[in-house]
Amino acid sequence: MFAEITNDIQVSVISEFHTIEKVTSLDQYIFHYHIQIENQGNFTVQLLSRKWIIIDAHGTQRIVEGMGVVGEQPILEPGDSHRYSSSCLLPSPFGKMSGSYTFERRIDGEQFNVRIPEFRLEVPYLLS
Image (cartoon, rainbow, N blue to C red; front, top):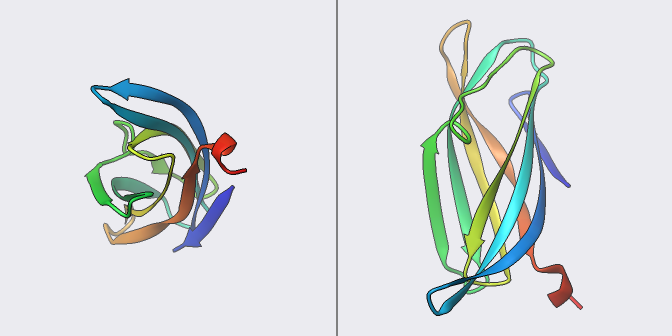
């Protein structure tokens, strides 16, 4: 598990290899990742958007940005947490992801960024 705390928000990530999928003539590796976001601060916050930086084994970088996470913009009271799972397709058996979330403090509308810790995407049987 990978975890990091920024501005009283803890983000924890677990990733796992799922399968290889044939897409046209290329093999695409499917990785799942599971995220837990915990509000360890004293203010209610709302997750507004995300930015992912995805790098494959060839060094190719892709940036993915969007509103919320899996169609939601969760509101977290102090002590609350939100969990979700998603997937990433890679053209290689190894890679990594990192990024950030933009949150808004509900009491005053102040926006701030929270780091998503870098985590590896690996096909386990290719590691040995």
